[in-house]
Length: 110
Image: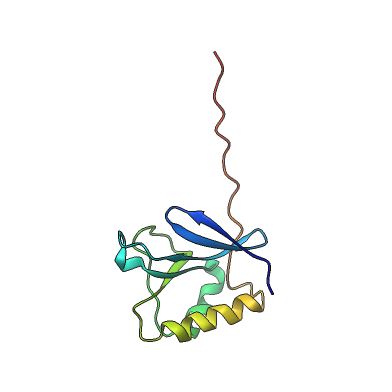
């Protein structure tokens, strides 16, 4: 079994494999158009990855090109989710990215 860790990230459940964030799951009724699996893929690998999926689209809520959505209401949701799971299981470089370190909030003392 892979050492996948779940964390919370702006209202979704995010999943990490080591230091690499690989996907997130959104079930929020606040953003129904973004419900499903959010997959992060380096831009340089998307031309190989995206043709393997039947249906995907941009995530309206975050508007970034590295992330895309496998919508939960898609007729091919299970097929596409299985494709992503297989790639994660193989530790494919096509899935995931190491997030930039968070900036520390340094307060000046008076």
